[in-house]
Length: 112
View (cartoon, rainbow, N blue to C red):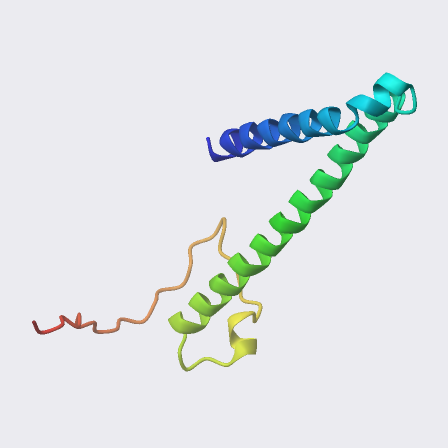
């Protein structure tokens, strides 16, 4: 749903931009110095530039999400070294995994 809303607002902005350009170049079109081909080329370039900016923004969002994920991993393993978090371990997909050692857990309830 979020992607649809983003696409919808992007389409609305593109129509606004094209409308503004048409208003600005109306006198040039009337004089014959700005052709329909020039406008079509502008619309094409507008899509290329807007798409590139969107991809850069998505990349920056992914970097921020990755940083948050890594910081959460570090907080889960407070005493672990960085290389311990990414160390290769056996993955038990088809076989039975080994028994885990029992640990005691006492929840920390804040006093009010």
